[in-house]
Length: 232
Image 1 (cartoon, rainbow, N blue to C red):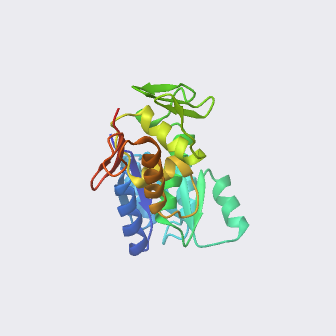
Image 2 (cartoon, rainbow, N blue to C red):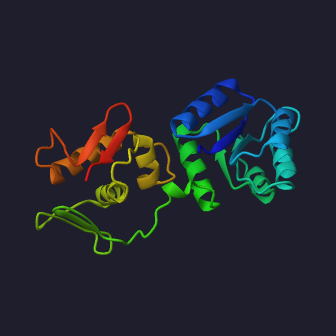
């Protein structure tokens, strides 16, 4: 089931972009254009996470966060154009889990959403990594996170740290398709904007190291229009 995200934001352009990126990230967003509308929605159903602009008309974002925190422990990410430390501290003291200063990268915001859900134990269990030190073997290829080693047909294959993390993630979940945004968030974590082409470059380098013919890959397969998967 998709995680539900409530966006309380009065600027239509920002709300539209955030909604689009959340949808692309596999979430189910809803939008409230002011604090009173957001409170009305929250009185009927609590989402998995709230993104709240501090400068909402009517009931401002800090007041909404205070009201919400008195009723629920749902994670909150605050959006603010204010850069003063006092505003960030006020939001965190009222119970916000994170904050993002405008202007921001919508991709980074989605990464922060995932990080907060993970940190608060609300991430989909199917997406949580378990036994991260377990070696994996498929036919003639073995990857071992304890020694950070990959062997292929008895040969040691040198990998960079990011190449190793990406391959290990995909091998842990064979045939699961990962979008470029998902791989960026999982491997690079919550960072400033990173060109999605970075993923393409790392996939190409991995194919050059583990595929018999990198131009027609059989291990790391492209799912056109979606992303990549490991085919055991």
